[in-house]
Image 1 (tube, helix red, strand yellow):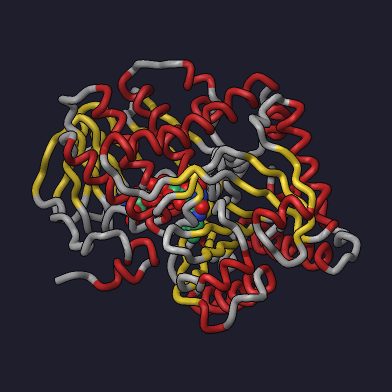
Image 2 (cartoon, protein in one colour):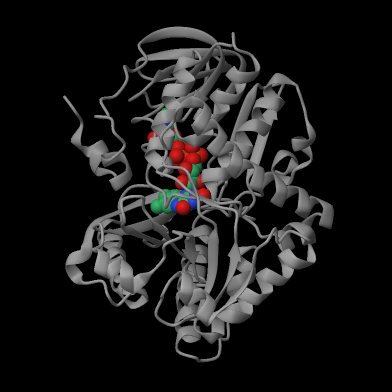
Amino acid sequence: MIPVSYAQTSFWLETCGEDLTPRKPLSGDITVDVAILGGGYSGLWTAYYLLQAEPGLEVAILEAEVCGYGASGRNGGWCSPRYPINPDVVERRYDVETARLTVTAMKEAVAEVGRVCAEEGIDAQFRNVGILSLARGEAQMASVRGSYAVYDRLGLLDGGGLLDADALRSRVRIEGAVGAFHSPTGAAVHPAKLARGLARAVEAKGAQIYEQSPVTALSVDGQPGLATTGGTVRARRAVVAAAEAYLPKVKGFGRKVLPMSSSIVLTKPLSKDQWAQIGWAGGEGLGSQAFTVDYLTKTSDGRILYGSRGAPYLYGSATDGGEAAMSRTHTAMREELRRWFPVLGDDDFSHAWSGFLGVSRDWEPTVSFDPLRKIASLHGYTGRGVSTTNLAARVLAEKILGRPSDLQRLPLARHSAPAWEPEPFRYLGVRYVQDAFKRMDAARDAGRPAPIDANLAKQLSAP
Ligand SMILES: Cc1cc2nc3c(=O)[nH]c(=O)nc-3n(C[C@H](O)[C@H](O)[C@H](O)COP(=O)(O)OP(=O)(O)OC[C@H]3O[C@@H](n4cnc5c(N)ncnc54)[C@H](O)[C@@H]3O)c2cc1C
């Protein structure tokens, strides 16, 4: 029987071109070289690069639901060169050369996703569309100019530049938009087609994928492996934890990332007349400077996807519950998108969903492998994982196989993010920052001075 709920998880899973009948679960005990927990981009890319480097390697992936069930099948489709922390923050924490290396590696990761899609015949609708990081209102323009100045100073503009209100309007007509920083690099993808296509690609290379196989422990009889209620996988060379927002439920990873709800609303395919009023022929990724984050994607079938932060953080890093808050968030987001594009009506919306992304304490991703314990993990993409997972997986495959390249100089290869605070401090701090960011956006939109605690909220949130 087809589990309807998987198709209902997001528009992307609904339209991924598969019926989502789960692959068979693990039953019995097996031994492989590398056992991977999680069938999202992180786990799948890791398997891909391991098998590309060593075609005979035995790799098994255990996925609790179906591949692409998590953030990888629900995201906004931005395959962006933007690292989870901005280049000036990389420069401040490391040095200018590391900032340049990171931006360059991220651009290459975007290209690499496109290259693999073409090579493996994955029809993920990969389109190089660029990014418009825009100001809605004069108050946001300082932030736009600031980003441009950083890329300019580091020599990383690559043909990008500042657009004034008229130049922006010639690309896309957004109510209240006064300018933008245009970057030519950045792609849009169909997220679930990418995840599901990758799963097929790694199977073709010899990986075994078991779905509906939730892992209960990262060891088997005290040795590296994955345990499920239906069987076990012993691992000769490495066990990989690739569960991102679900990682806190895995023993030993409780405070590595914080699950942050993220929500999306989607329109129906718009009419020719509506598109004539909006413009946006280039389909660039759009985002404003809102503290509460917003991003817009034009889908390949002519819809507008609008994403933003979702329901408030749930106590104890829970990833279930909060449905009422999500529904309220979706309503507010539909209203907000109609403020961007007043040509949209109530009836123009077709889908809404939410998911969880993993936020690390300092917003930096971590890729680690302990060769003694044979435990590896890659996590903490902080909402910028469509491209970053590809880079992280290449770094991890090198570590597991003991074949380092220059990629090991990147921050994510040598950094370990600090743990989140224990509860109830985590809950109190995160809820406070989430509320402060909303108040900061409201004040800026209304032309009022920033709230008195704005700097405190920014400092508490890390980057
Ligand atoms: C709504 C939303 C919008 C986003 N938009 C963007 C965007 O536009 N651009 C961008 O770059 N990033 C975006 N992101 C972030 C991006 O999607 C993620 O960073 C990326 O998909 C992470 O991939 P992953 O494989 O690490 O995690 P996931 O895709 O979450 O995969 C983890 C997998 O592990 C499985 N799992 C969990 N526990 C277990 C267990 N015990 N046993 C077995 N399996 C388990 C889960 O079922 C899941 O399939 C967004 C995220 C969300 C939620």
